Image (cartoon, rainbow, N blue to C red; front, side):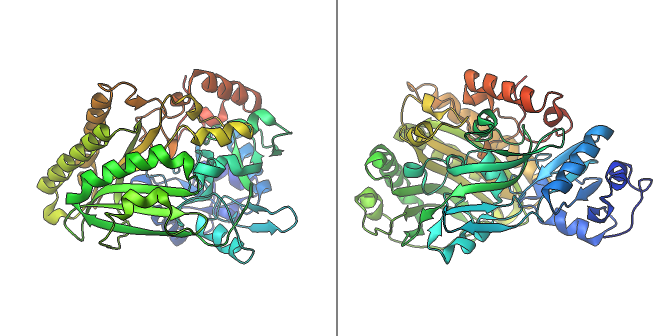
Length: 467
């Protein structure tokens, strides 16, 4: 790190005065650009005045007190996976980068694992492998842990373990006044529940403790096929979702995607059985059509747009979404030379049974227990190479999602209220979709632990509590 003064970086002056100078990066420091380049999507990069890299909860506490006293705006970054501008980075402000809080500790007696917000899910899985344990965490190893958990977290285990947040038993949190507290079901029960989906509205989590799960064999894989099978995949997905309560150890993600390497739309699915059963009856309809395999991977260093909806488990709505995706691909082909882009039109089962585990162990703040029918978690994504292409694709993705919403509205119960915060665009209102009662609860909790509204004003990024 370079030697800086408050005169060179006014936003860092309060941190320097607090004795944190050796943990600050400015644009003159080569490591500053390395941290900015490490975001999942170019869309997220904002250009902060400086990056603060704490190495302990105490340093986070010191920084928060200094920033609040100086009224300096800040952002909070864990893995940096969310592709929303200003969500986990801040133009002209201070980005608190938690990547150095990366310890992982497993307790063999309690079978609990504790880890910092600086780790990725692959690190947690690697640390637990020697103990034949796993956690209900992210399905992509590079995803950061904190944003995923504070947004709820849909996992391969949701059907029989609840969302990822339902498996958290303890949080260490730095509050707006700098206090460091341990939050559990029996201590600070209100904050404990609000953190299970409340995002960055209530404090900075500096460690998570989670239940672990016995790991023996997990069967799964990814397969792709030509677009002619899309109607079959849609029918099989609806049937899988209907039957999922009978096979809670089975999990599925289905996609209708344009792949820049293939230069065409392909259909595919990721199938997982968490107990290693290869021929589970849950996959009977899918296995009959999943014959041709083609490995794919998400591109890096792109501009990303994504929107989400929760729709009724209905073939008509899925078919409409696939139709909208086809039109989106044609629009992008007309604008982007050589078809050099990628898209994802993704469906994930969200049956009513998913809420049962959450309710049984004390509940979260997501509000999906209000769903009146089995649903599908839908996401529409584009990944392009330039900011101009991203502006073009953003408007078309947004319009496409509106068309799907309008169509779903013509079917009884076709559009469910819930908006998954980890897939939402910044124009959407995921916290408001949790339901009026849950919003009121979160506001009461925020008023208790952050009475001055620090995380609503000085930390403007992400999704804020509805006003």
